[in-house]
Image (cartoon, rainbow, N blue to C red; front, side):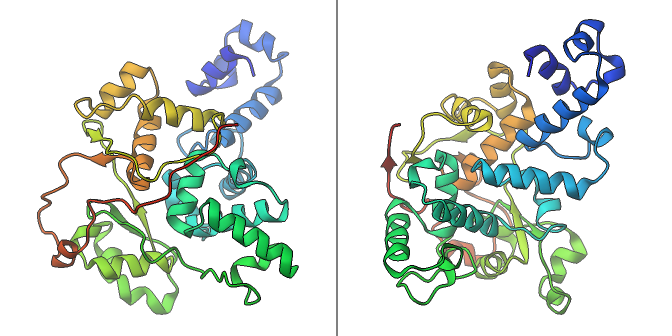
Length: 325
């Protein structure tokens, strides 16, 4: 795609308002522009509502199905910023998404190193599957001739993965808890969220929040505001696989290495000349993975006593795995 055409797509410019020079590049074809807009939106995991793609593709669910299919095929991060539709509307949780990616990799007998770095880190965080676990799973599959798509539920191997995220999953008290996938008979469990909207995780029992999340009944948002500052602690769990990735993976690195604890998110976006929402999504992901910490969250008011017992100031100790290709 021409950089000039892409610039107009980013500006949400409809075909009718494109300058003649850009229309000429498109062969004076509105259909060609429509195709490029849809492809760009899917590759960049853009929200359907509020973006140009909505005027060109009428089926919102169909759009998100294509977006998830593309993201899965290209081993991209789960689009957490779209959880309000993908979790509640499509009933696809991050855990289910990454299980599908792992199954695809195993069926194709691909190396663990084919996972992009941030995707590998999130798989390790949610599934508990790092390089060593992946290799052992693959070896046991081959030796026992287990069907790959059943590996996570198979009793013929020593590796039996449950249908829930790992029990040691870290949740910070300042993350927001939203209603997720809720069977009708269990809605009473989270009446507070239903009645009053999103709640800070730290305002309710830590064990209950984790239990609801692991069952897919709620989803978690990691809110980042324009004036927030974040710091990067010494990394113990960074999984380094590929040095080259897609646009979003490359952007994640660009923003990550530029973080300064005295620079606000809005200032960082201005310095890098990157869209503010993209920077906020990226910083949110770093905090979710435990690679960054939002400043000013150590003494939250109305903190439930259960959070005092949780060592939320530390990320889980993951294995540092580096492979340069």
